[in-house]
Length: 319
Image 1 (tube, rainbow, N blue to C red):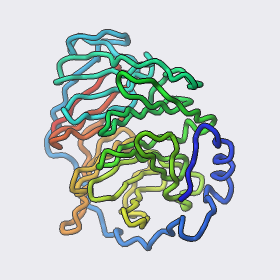
Image 2: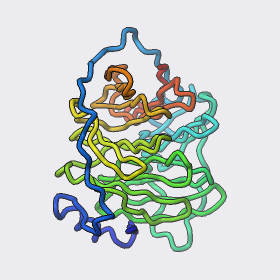
Image 3: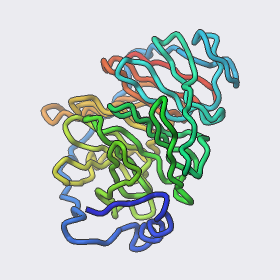
Image 4: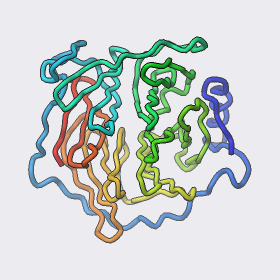
């Protein structure tokens, strides 16, 4: 199994990804070739029959930096978000170089970041994506570095060099022991306590496209989106395009239900849900206009949380 050290081999990886239409070469058993696509049945396009219930739960009071009661709080430009096991939210406050926390949809606070590790080359800044593992490890993608820390510990970092714009997908594995991330058109995983990402698969058929969103599911499937469509990568290493009739070229964020039967997308500013149950006709329903937002599904799967970079807020949509 190959490994990839972001800090030391960014240039090598960049060359590898650019060559052969981003198809990294290796031993035959390292790269699983895509299977034939079978999920190509017709998809019925629907619209929500009632207006969704949406409320701002934090921010929305103009740009700023103010903790306290959520209704009075001020946030910067919010990028990624993470739903913790207790239902609280962690927010990537990109503009304020901070991780904010929303507790009980009512209180906003700022996570006290630990000091940088002695050999760390990067100061914590510009958080874009976040995931938290079972052992309490925070994994944060910034503009030019990846950061790893536990509360009360120290912050370690890896430089991303010129690849920062292509790392758009990040999600924790349902086992809580590792994260999955995308780099250009490739999928990697990274175990807790490590700062080395292990190569899993390259979607060579993306051509010049990048993976733009990533979501993991307890059924072992990793779902990824690009400007070419939707793809899956199973626990057995099988990769394929899915729902090939689906026209979704601007997916910025996605979330998946625990059973894998519902896939939520922010497709070009529209929140959509796809029914992915093979026992039923497949549909895609437009739920609401949410802008250029990151989304996350609540633990009880009754709500979608979404961020707003320009409105400096986080909102909650009832499903």
